[in-house]
Each structure stands twice: as C-alpha cells, then as structure tokens.
Image (cartoon, rainbow, N blue to C red; front, side):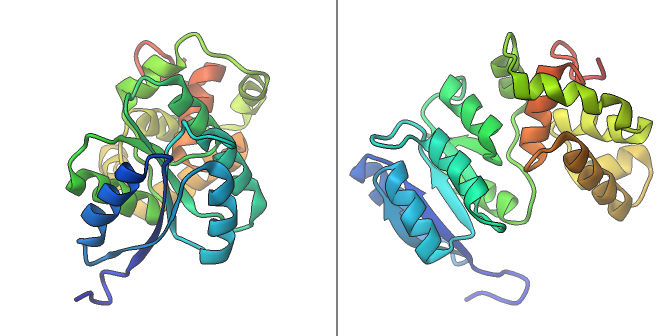
Length: 228
C-alpha cells in the first residue's frame, strides 16, 4: 500500500532478451511504488510504447536490434517537451555504448547484475530529477573522448559563475544536492537554482549529461574531478 509520500512510478522496460525483461518485471513489480506498464524488445518499440503509455522512467538496454538504446534515448529526449527519464541497464559499466547513451541524455546507468533494491533505487532517483552517476566509471569512459558538440560547450565556460563551477565540480564527484548544500553551506534551494543554471548554460538535459559534457570540454578535469 502506497502513501501520499510514496507516489507510484510507472516504468517501461526495454531489452531484446525476453528472459531479462521477465526477470526485471518480476523483481521490480514486487516494489509497491513501482508499476511496470510495458515491455519493449527493441528501440523502435520503445518509441511507440513511450508515446502511448507515458511512463515516468524507461529502463533501457543499449544493444538492441532495429533501433539501439542510444538512438532511442536521443529520439525520446527530443520527441516530447516532457520525455520520460531514462536509466541505461548494462552488462558492463565500461561499455562505450553506455557512454554514448549518457551523452544522448540518459540520466544514468545501472548494471544488470545489480540487486533489485539498487535498480529500484536508481529508478526512484531519476524519477525525482536526480541522476545515477558513478564518477569513476564516467571519468574512465570520458578519457580521450571529444566531440564537436562537447567542444562547443567550452564557449559556455565564461558564462559559468565561480559558484556554478563549484556546483559542477561537486556534480562530477557524484554529490547530491543535499551534500553540495552541506559542503558549500548554502540552502538546498540555492543549490537547485545553481544546478538549473548550469544545465541551462551547458545545454544539458540533466546532471549526468552536464558532467559528461564538462569532462569532454575540459570544464572539469578528468584526472581529479576538479576544475580544469
């Protein structure tokens, strides 16, 4: 039984392996605040089902036939003014497909072998606008990567205030808004405002994409996680 403090999160599972989908549905449906409203076998199915079912979160595999999870993520992010949040579910966290999905706008990733409670926690985090960020893994994936879109972000560097750079550094370290507020000794609302400004100035869909772009453009150093 749920309460007003525990809203139900609707979920669409996308994976080309039926056994994986069935297992995830069984595990996640057991959580009282999670409602699996559909399953998709490839990225093309995801698009139609997301439009019809309007899930809060899509649990997205990246290696799928017809349309992979990367392109499906990109299309979902641009197809609607209020797209679902996307969590990539993967076998290997150092998979470059995962990194490309993060660049396309996924809010984070989780391994398929993770316990059900961790997968459920990741879903809850992104449903509330947070991200699932593993700083070391993202930093490794970002090493040596550069793209015109990311390089263009460097033009936004002068527009970031000193405080916004501090917030971006803490985001890259995987800190939550509450943790950032405590470290900087400011209110939670102030941190949320700064985060919003950072996302807007970098043209990022979410915190995770902002960190990816910041690494690639040099706004955050790859070796330390601190300012470049």
